[in-house]
Length: 410
Image 1 (cartoon, rainbow, N blue to C red):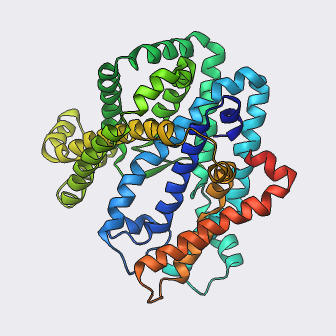
Image 2: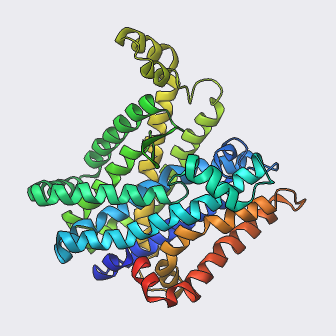
Image 3: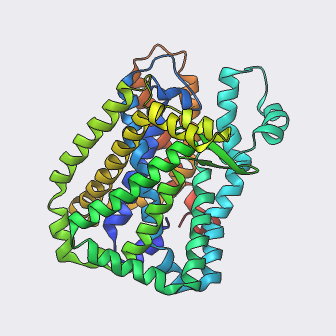
């Protein structure tokens, strides 16, 4: 996740691609309140909503985290090799641990208070909310901060595997090096693995549901193993060396428009199917409920046959859409972002700070604009430009002037 590894390896396009993905995330947060169906999952839900932003949410929500975890996984092993296990852990604690602790204490309650103030009790002060509601009952790593603890946990597991079984990572790298040169084999094998993971986790935990792991640590049940898969893939891809094979990358990137068209087709199929059958079983959770009630295998199988086929088909389309977007963005990054640019360089330098802080102004601007009669696009423009752009400006011109902040964000 840290830019230092990217700069050391001269992978400018990965650095800029990471910035692009995080800006997509910021835009996703800026429009989430205005999605007709999925807006209810956001901290703030506006009265003025449209299905157009359901489509945008489903597109961005499917690929953002796989890309973030993939890019983060790229630099774990190189960082361990350079700094040793102790240095790597120290770096992770500074880069992920400090923002996590400060975020859970100071930033997450600001996000939740906006929702509480809007939907439950507008008369409760922030101090009263923090002491009487947030800390005793709602303490959580929501907002961007769940990502930090999961990244740290995955990094720790990968470090242990690498130290105990170094041949395992080298073997995965060698496997990736072979199969990416045989694209049909790579696509089929990885897609089958992705479909299996997505389908099983969706059946067990359900598509939209989060579960608490311990205390305030939560995971989205149907996504965390997908994120782990892409994190491990990132490590294996870096170990394979293919990101430095210019001739192969140029051939791969030259096909970006074809990959784009495949992603469009898969997106239309996934989003269209999911929204069309959302009331008829595309998100059916009967299997999850029966599993929680410890029903017999025969009952579970009957429920799967009778109720879960549409849900299974959605996860198949979802997996295909994730993979097609992943291939497209990797080709897009190398084709168009593989040269130094001052604006992209500044954005990539400040991306992590924007990621950590942007939701506070975004959520509160959405809250303030709920009662506004402004056209919807104007609301979104204000939220994104002022909220995200203002955060970028503050991180770049104010926060990075402090040495400790730079150590955390770099």
